[in-house]
Length: 318
Figure 1 (cartoon, rainbow, N blue to C red):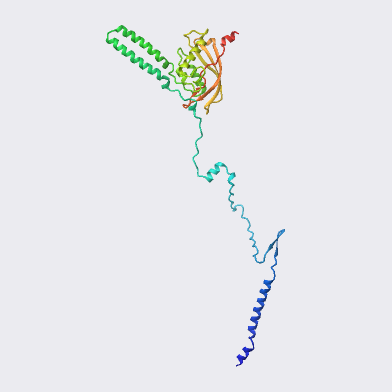
Figure 2: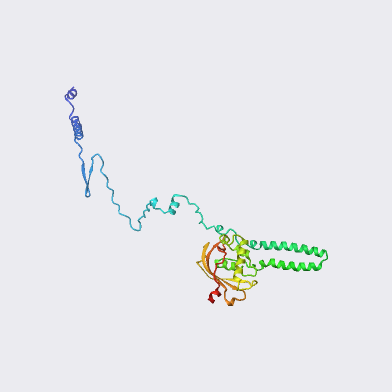
């Protein structure tokens, strides 16, 4: 009965203390909710930053001393901008490696379509020799069959002389025209002209496309006609018709021909009478022109004519 009377008068003292503490906490929460939030000024060097109480304050990183020089790690090199990378580096970085095309070379076939060959030089002569041999042997066979021995012997002698005449172009061109330099090409060209019967076919084969086209000729037959008339003109008053003229190339000057396919040069063509070299040249032709390299890596002449000059002996007489 006494406990019931005590409970009716109110809570016990311990319960009243707990209730008062709870009410005090509620009052503090309501006061803090009504009070406006004020910024907190945090110094940072020479400037000030505004910090809000709701956001957590930035944390400072602890200072870490750099490693010693022998233990310091090398920082990777930053990537360079794409526009500053060279084309070769861009190809190796951005694209897979591709086979690069070979450097372009000058096509000498456009300058020399028909190169010198032994077959082109001797072909017509060999065909003529075969035809003449068949004809001569057939005629000799029938003469012997008819017992015409004297006529057969005369035919054999004449056939031998004709055969030697037909063989003459081969005999004077046994040496191959090796033209590793432009000067050698000029020497071989004029050497083929320095015979009783010049080898016009070899001269024609040593000309480039430009050398085979001139205001004087445009074919092998025209080329032969030009040089026959030129030789006749050079011999007039200087040498007999049967005496061959000797052509010599002197004073050739040009830049080095190594690695080039076309070259400009200057030279002098001196004309002598065979057997009279001590008397000096009867003609001298200062000349300049171009030479080109053909597909066979040999040199060919761009001009197959001879310039017009006065006689050196006539000039000395004046």
